[in-house]
Image 1 (cartoon, helix red, strand yellow):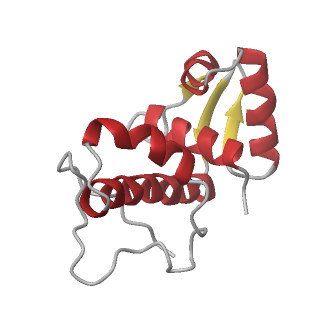
Image 2 (image 1 turned 90 degrees about the vertical axis):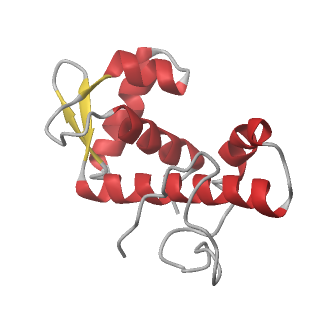
Length: 137
């Protein structure tokens, strides 16, 4: 099971990566999004590249590998499902749920278990009306 740090990096790369899989994310943008120094982000990206989760290019640019993209989608989906749970089941206000979901997304059972899927009749939409990404596998 990947660490929360790995999951956060992959999720941020996914959110920063333009819709074209051929375009790369700069290390500066990634470092800013994760809240670390560029050198720290570079070290982590190199470790992710060794695990085949990202493709690291010279000049400090990165993109997700297919397996990295899949994991990032699982993390994002868990995040959005937690937001739904917090709003629809616990009755929290939408303005409160993002930070809670940021913490809880790493505590939920990992991808592939089927335990993090919504129950029968559950909406697949976030309170913001954006649909959740569909995961394969």
